[in-house]
Image 1: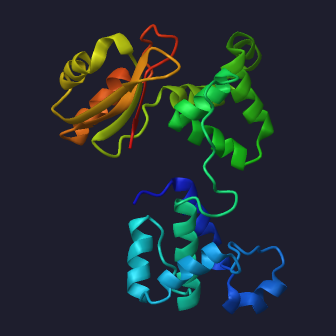
Image 2: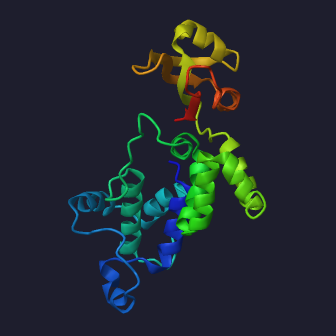
Length: 252
């Protein structure tokens, strides 16, 4: 199981201030702390029932697999609640964690970058988390009105613009040999598409269909090894195939 850096940092930051029924007395004195999860929520109760029989070692192992260390000073109950929250957040079952639905069309270049460039989305979130509205506005302007923004900020925000350029051009992470793709011309057909992708490495599986809105193919391809998948992303992700959209290839 892979866990995002943001989620790991969130747990590390809150570990020493974990709020649970066993620590309510301390919480009354530290009003700044907020309960991480609602213990009356049936979803939370159901997940807690699954965690309840687990040993410290089992909980620690599952947390560590997601890159979250188990604080040795944490009580058995608090550690179980920490695991409950991690599971619920990773599966989007907490209020506010529901996955947003991707728009069928994008209103701006900024919105498109947020949805299609994972490295850029992570980059922008850094400034969002800092409430750095000046930098956020510069980033948005650079995407939406690049010529004007370049004149305005090329000197005063030179470092930020360098980071922005890197984030926009960074290839998406590849975590498995299976990739989702969208954007190859539909007139290629599955046979030609397979031949094109096989030039990068052996293919174990390919599924594709024509998009209902555009004359493009979308689907999944599974390579025999992750290195071939990385080569595919590096070669084709973001390429303009002349179909009015850019190729999108992301790891599953």
